[in-house]
Length: 284
Ligand code: PLP
Image 1 (cartoon, protein in one colour):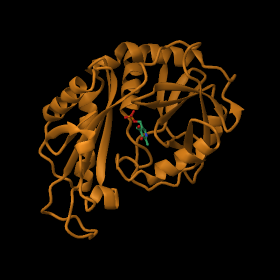
Image 2: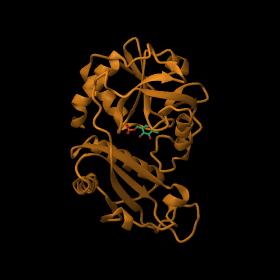
Image 3: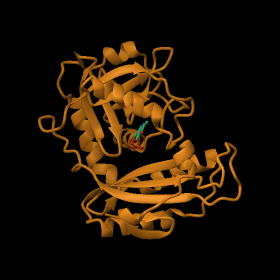
């Protein structure tokens, strides 16, 4: 397994970082995950732009262009077997000589990247697709969820709640009982053939899959699409429920808190949406 660390490629066993790295001590960093299928990256420019937005938001300065990142990605794909790979990129603020909360201005960011295997691309077939079960709980993370921060303890704890309950994901709602997202996915509902997802704000990550799916559905025009506040009552009364992420595409949810979603089966609107998504995602 060949990884990239601070300008060099090396076996993972040789990749070493300082315990004074602020990524380790404070979770002070930004990360990205980009999917690739047989060497083809999906949504690369969008992912790198989101990572740059995150670095701008927390004041990490790094001189890397989209092409620099693409070179790293292509090299990792070449050196790790060209299968279906997720590319993980991580930029932390870097290692300081002392532990002090304020951003030091004289340190260099730590840049790490590696490739890991992801499942085959999702097949838009109701009878073959993995059926997801989820739990729900109040979103107790911080109020800057639009930043893809490496400080993931809040997400990890919420994911664990679902894991302990024997389900695949945990969907989250705010203090007003409104859907935000899931611990590692965005969330969509379908009601009367309308596809609905919460609007972008500080309560959720601007998912690249979410963005591409909305764009693809709007360009296609068959389905009506809405970005608006969704109450948990609406979620519980939805015909279909989906969770989206770069490694899952559009994953159909058939059970929420032990109760069937809609008729408890993967829906026809999912089938249509995933068909369109599979056909168009390589254009991004
Ligand atoms: N929301 C959270 C909290 C995430 O960690 C992720 C990414 O895995 C997503 C949403 C989905 O984002 P994307 O579609 O860019 O993978």
